[in-house]
Length: 142
Image (cartoon, rainbow, N blue to C red; front, top):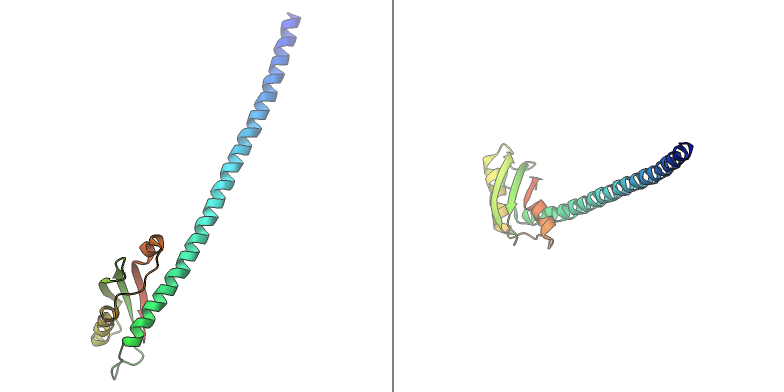
């Protein structure tokens, strides 16, 4: 009985050691998974930030292209309107919508017409970035 008791105690100690080793491995695995998750999250944030910078560059190009062809009529000085432009992959315009009017319908229509007049617009080569910018909203104030 004493031998069995010692044998059982030894097996229990071995099982406890194995359990501790397994718990340590599990903790390490969970930590590694958390690190991989955090690295992916950071990489995604960096990619998103880079995409936003690229989109801003193209939005500025579009705005500049519009401003260069836009003629301000007397009484329209200082006006601005918020425009949403929907693009297709080749830079062609699908639709233009005035989201916030300048208060002058003639100015708003002229801004919409300017979009179509200078299309197609430059678009990024990356499909991922284009998908994020196929709808551009900006304040147009020539």
